[in-house]
Amino acid sequence: MTKMVIRADKVESFFSRARKAAQKADCSQSFKKVATLSFEDPQEMFMVLSEARRRLMLEVMEEPKSITQLTTKLHRERSAITRDISLLEKVGLLISQKRTNPGHGIEKVVKAVSPKIEMFATLG
Image (cartoon, rainbow, N blue to C red):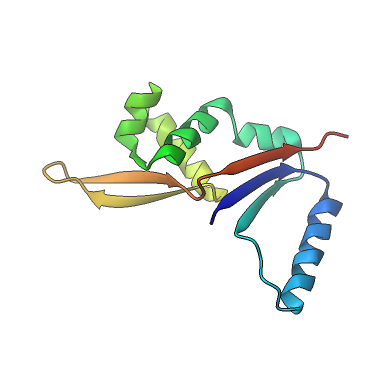
């Protein structure tokens, strides 16, 4: 996918976008390579995308990194990095894969689902 959009907006906007997408699909029109992650409440969006998690995402958007590399680069506890990766995978922003680390067992490598992420929040 070429772009990820994260937005906080009213439920009506979500269903409006869904209806338009369904109409496009019904007409066999093609879709842009964009995925959207929607939050009903801007506060929830900001909780999920905390400053620490945004920094983590920026690191793996540059290039995939192992948890050990992220721990060193971000100066954070391994358990906190692992917890944040798990949450960001759950919402669909990150992907992790296990790979062999010759002489050291297996390591988990984390990458972003998209090289570009746009964030929008509508208040009021």
